Length: 480
Ligand SMILES: Cc1cc2nc3c(=O)[nH]c(=O)nc-3n(C[C@H](O)[C@H](O)[C@H](O)COP(=O)(O)OP(=O)(O)OC[C@H]3O[C@@H](n4cnc5c(N)ncnc54)[C@H](O)[C@@H]3O)c2cc1C
Image (cartoon, rainbow, N blue to C red; front, side, top):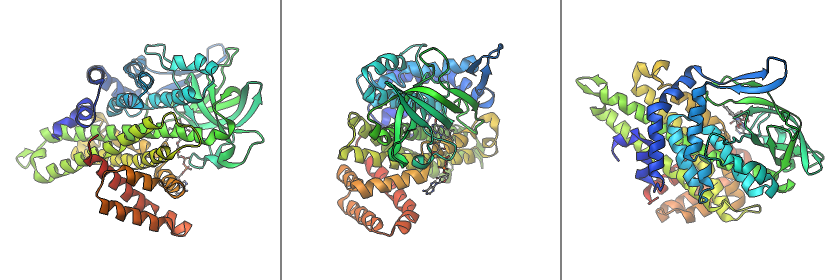
């Protein structure tokens, strides 16, 4: 693969997978080149959203204010199909391809599309006909009037241990529920509708007591259904309004059965983690492109630095890693498409999908961090300067590493699905790899799973890293 392919996300996609809507993606990419890049850089630098809590007459309005260009940028992706394409022919892959282009230009902007998709899919799957009629059509619009979704789980005591830390209470009131509590990290605050994790009053403790609710921005009487306490000032994803939300007897609607709550929450997380993987690879490609553009023009020791053997070798290695990371991320997309209709209790294909999602989230986020760090190095001193924007990719990469569950969550949940569902066996049946290598990896995992609990957890990162790398290599070597 030539280095030049790094400069275009559509070129890269076409090189590695079939892209039926390539013309539309090229048009979207052209818009980014002609207008979007400048808007995105300006928003990152000085255009983050802010909150107007009251109107001039003292009424609570909780309006989030953006520079007008932000809206143009945001609506481009919705029009291009970041959400509706997942329902037009039924393939999540088409929506994730739009996400790849977005992620190359603005990792943060991919967040609203991701959480909107992660709202629309469970609503479509688990919502009543009445709920779908009220909310789904608006989330799938292809014009300016499109509604946005959001996924709010995390509370102030921490996001990893939802079973212990979600205190938001849900009380039934006829065919609706009333939610009271606070959400501490709420991306896309201001969304017209969100999916929210809450604890059914009098239910079981821990994760088994959680359920998933659909929560509109406005009550049926037209007043605000949730309040935005503040927006956070973040190192990256600066275009996204990530806030803190207060729920006070907020009207909500149960999705699926109450006892399915944690499974539905995990389904939402699965969709977002796949998007995180797609975004991480796109971010890595962008960082490498920034390195390439500089390396072609910076002259040192008598020639452009790209012509020095050491730097060329480093480029080759990063490009190969990018291809492996993409192969792993894309496998999670394909598997998710295959199990999209499955509901609890899930079958083997779902457990395999879950393992690959954990591997992909873990592996691709690290690839993004390393690519972004190296791109800064290649750019030397200018790489550290905010005016050139290369440093931005390292800031963005640190967010994709942490949100949707930091590395430890992927490792330990991955370990659990191997231990309880034998997902590694399903993976080895799925991969087209050297039988001797498969056998060796299987033996290593089995030996690890037999360790005492503390030892098993303590050493799990090395095992998971090795399995992710093994899987990515095997997938990159087989046709997409
Ligand atoms: C910009 C941004 C936007 C976000 N938007 C949303 C959103 O829209 N909706 C939402 O629900 N959440 C959102 N989050 C929250 C995010 O999902 C959490 O930050 C993440 O899940 C980690 O939770 P935490 O920050 O509370 O860290 P904690 O869970 O408190 O973890 C702290 C540290 O301890 C480690 N750790 C915890 N448990 C273990 C263990 N068993 N073994 C080893 N290490 C462990 C973690 O890896 C981490 O390093 C957002 C976060 C950010 C940064």
